[in-house]
Image (cartoon, rainbow, N blue to C red; front, side, top):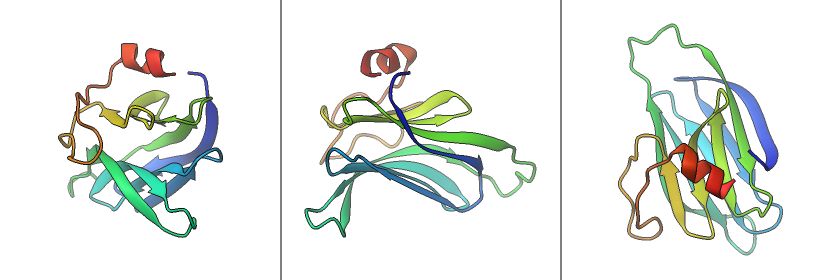
Length: 135
């Protein structure tokens, strides 16, 4: 995968986690959030002043069930493509979600949630062929 590693940290599913990465070349960014129950990867756009943002799309990463008590630590990375228009969420060296800001598309493993009315309008299926094509 060619690109820029912009964030890297350990993550334990089910623990409150918030990681933001904004492109230095445009107003696009991503946020990874685990609220203790559900983890999502968001595509965001900063406003012109740079102090506000709007969510463009959200991709489900995983649910944490209350009975899960032995969660392993995972290596979480946010990697931007060299054109700063694509961004991937990598967990333990596997791409779990990817945003293509130019095509206004979001892709993830479980294809959930369905595409929204303002951004992603097509297929959400994430596979190795798509990853290689975009990165």
